[in-house]
View 1 (spheres, helix red, strand yellow):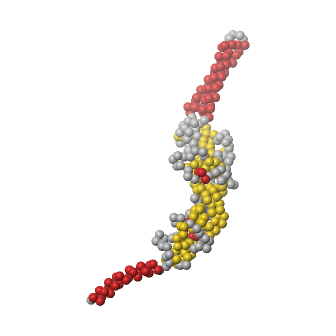
View 2 (view 1 turned 45 degrees about the horizontal axis):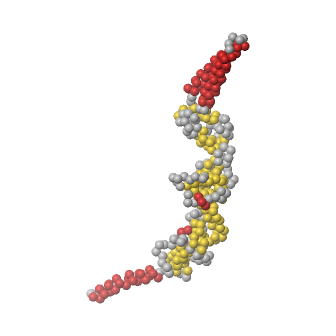
View 3 (view 1 turned 60 degrees about the vertical axis):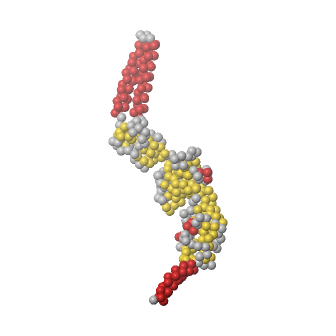
Length: 351
């Protein structure tokens, strides 16, 4: 009985020690990759929206019910073309009233002129009749102008981008019923964080991608930087002129699409690149002679897929792609080359 007890105690003591030794000496498996050479782009990241360079909202000056719609989205219109009309019965009656008064003043003026030629009245009475005629004409023109404001007219040649109204719908004063774009191609309006705006300059190159067109990269340049930022979002609006910009209805890029923009600060060719997942707190793990070693590095431009290493790493080094938190200095390890999709990423490095 005592012998069995001694054996049990011995096993209880030896097994954990044996397991600890095995855990210490048994090599851990890690995914590895070699640094690659490629272009590193130091850029300011921003989100933007595609918009027309010239955009014109068309709204009524006074509220009313839409009587008729004469244009639709996507339609090309010409300057002065009537797009819609707001119901205005009271103004129509006012115009008729002013025209009747003008006719009466015109008739009175003609009679006064004949009487003046026959020397039956004084010049003062003739001047009064002429003034009344001019006042009546001005009142008619004013009433007609007010009535014309109820016709929504295209201010220039262009394309109807959006129509927000239906016949019979009441439209408040100043609410845009049509949005037109004219005479200029599309551009991008981006919001840049105030921490990065100092790195943005006019003429700076920009590369853009859109989720709506994932296979294409659009190039452009910074054309305008708003001098005052938004204190709420703490950002500045930056206008980007597109290279080979399409017209507002040329496609495939369309007004209203969102884009991810990289405003390029610097581009370095043949830079040393590693997977971004390999860099943790300014250091990487190297696998050399079957053991792991921690190596401090200086990172440059960083993106979702790749990070530039400015110093601390050589081309021949073998790095751990996704190091676990429990790795130890000098730990035995066995490397497995990572898939190419892990080590290779987008040529755009964002910051």
